[in-house]
Length: 223
Image (tube, rainbow, N blue to C red):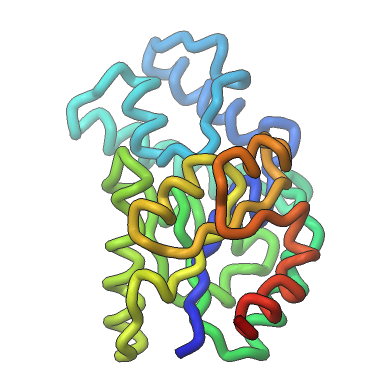
């Protein structure tokens, strides 16, 4: 059976430029009287949105979390434009390659589901992703693969195993996430971590960018 592929978004598929997303979060926090002057410099890489907002809001109750989440999503949809987003080299070609392979392609991202859709729709890349898991309900990224796997089985009706998943991301947390579910970990050095830093985490494969993905996958499938 061919593998199924799960892509991270930020740092792997795209980058929101000018720290536009963080500035938006800063403004929302200020509305609630929370002054986090360091938001633009915090390390969000590999974390889920639920974890990020829970930390910034000092472990809010569920009502406050939901209120801030809805404001954030509304403001993101209102303010984010294609000009705010940089798509990394090789992304379009890799997704087209997988489409031609008729591979099951999904998302495994810490983004809220609606935030993921907003970002990808802005650059015309929402359609390739048929299933996934998101950061709405989970603090720990390692809790995402079972959700994505269940959705894959439900949609495909095929007997996939965890080892049939290829999880692609740009942080040590993505690698650990794949490992936690017994899946293939592919690291791509387009985010905040260097090639050497990711190599030290011992992924199954490491790529400088997704430009290298189709050739790597051909070798992987041949083994």
